[in-house]
Amino acid sequence: MKTSGSLVGGQLKEDPRIYDAYARYLVKFVQAYAAEGVPVDYLTVQNEPQNRRPGGNPGTDLPVRHAAAVIAKLGPMLHRVSPRTKILGYDHNWATHPGDIASTPPGADPETDYPYRLLDSPAAKWLAGTAFHCYYGDPSAQSALHEAHPDKGIWFTECSGSHGPDDTPEQIFRGTLTWHARNLVIGATRNWAKSVVNWNLALDHTGGPHLGGCETCTGLVTVRPDGTFRADAEYYTIGHLAKFVKPGAVRIGSTSFGTTGWNGQIMDVAFRNPDGSVAVVVHNQNDGPRTFAVASGPRIFEYTLPGGALATFLLPGAAGLRQLSLDGAAAAASPAGETPAAAIDDDASTRWSSGAAQAPGHHLRVDLGRVREFRRVAIDSGGNLGDYARGWELAVSTDGTRWRTVAAGQGVGQLTNVDLRPTRARYLRVTTTAAAGNWWSVADLRLYR
Image 1 (cartoon, rainbow, N blue to C red):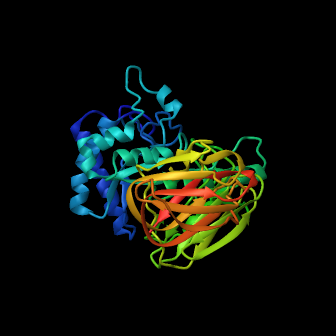
Image 2 (cartoon, rainbow, N blue to C red; image 1 turned 180 degrees about the vertical axis):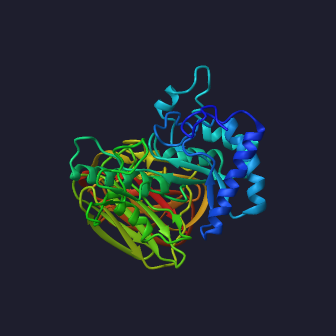
Image 3 (cartoon, rainbow, N blue to C red; image 1 turned 90 degrees about the vertical axis):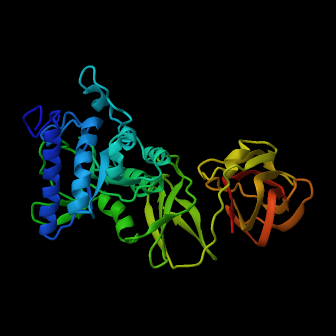
């Protein structure tokens, strides 16, 4: 069936009979597993289709046209005999690895936009979505694909920790935990992933067994020669999801101050479970401890997380407020300081800052674009410790000319929630009413109703 005459390397022969035979083989695979009590929910037609040098691992160079041809045959077959089994496309890295580009046959297209082409092909009608791996690029690629194809799902299906030849066990554990926390537990899930899957589950003390491929990969657990096992970093990172985020949970909005590129701030992701409870997974990117607040409904508490650590908080169900989108809003400030628009971009890793010590009369003004109704205004100074307004006043307006003050108070920490009666306004103005040596920073101004 392949140009290489081997399970390792090569391409499928360009022959409709080959595409049909491979599709029928995959259907038999699904049926055989189901017969043994293991129904298959999701299937990809080829692992890492651009990995043209898989070492000792079975692998196939599967260009988009070949993948689409197989999927066009496979889709109708599965629909008839196993409708629960959905097909995922691509199953490779967030971005095309330079090694995969370099190994592209002379004159051939490296297809660096592989998942886009596949979802733009007629075969897309049979695809539930796209599967991703972690070995090149970053999780933002998932959001970019979601923007282009919001009707298709995204699954994260493979990542293994790895290490250098001279790394100590402590270095391996810490490096793996912090990278997986940033990029998988939080990075993948904040970028539309419906799943997070680790590879490998268990390895022996030599990192095996394996057929070629990765000789430095790690697993969730290491099995020692005497039969005992050691829980490795991935055991804990995946556990923060698997233990607390229940089947059927949905991700909900939460304010994260960190980035997958590492900026030393607090990252987090939140999920609402089917029983109404909320699981909040928090990672401290910094080497030193960081203190943060968790606010959910009427509850608020502070917690100090050690450097590099990961923690999960399980909160009881509560009727919460719904955050309003500020798309189309505009912001201005006096003093202009640093980028007023950053205060309303729903990205807590960016900020507006006054650029000067706080003084009465400094203000941030937001034009919502139209009259909106809200019941809470959150003024969040994020990770810029101490840069909260020592005294503040909130005013609203429908025309930008006539203003009325609706609340005022003293700042006591990084997050100030201003709860109001249902209020309708197009313009908001937050003004400082006290002096302080700190600058005034707003990482996010959010509205809720």
